[in-house]
Length: 168
Image 1 (spheres, helix red, strand yellow):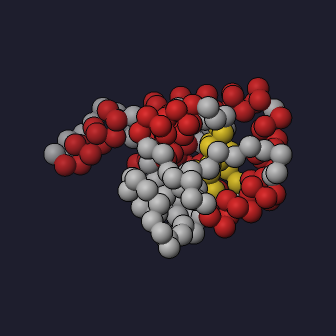
Image 2 (cartoon, rainbow, N blue to C red):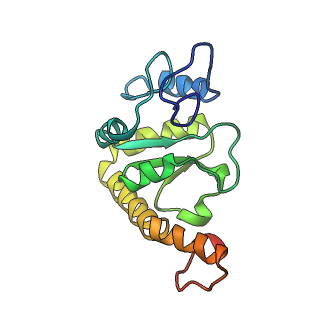
């Protein structure tokens, strides 16, 4: 998390609206180790440092700024799912329509998220199965070739041979 996309460092006097939620989540789950960057004077990490940090993780929270919006996510979703982390997403994003119900964990509030984090921390086999499915679906349907083809088909008005799951 940071106070601006890929800005590099935290800015004095700036706060992110997600900090309260994350602090409550950490407090509620004191037996779980959270690796949080971009708040409490811990600088955000980018590039290879980011990949190294998530490679040491089993789970990731895809928490965007503001209220969840239909089908919205930052690029974090690609990084989490694409690298095979069990990913938690607010159900109000309605991303279940695009990604499916068995490939990520959808939560409805802080208590539900806490429950599910603890559940999958214990059930590592099921967590890995869901994370793998999420990675496979994301790489199949949202890879750069597919997304680029979609944009080019719109720009140059041609019918693509690809099936874009977000146009259904």
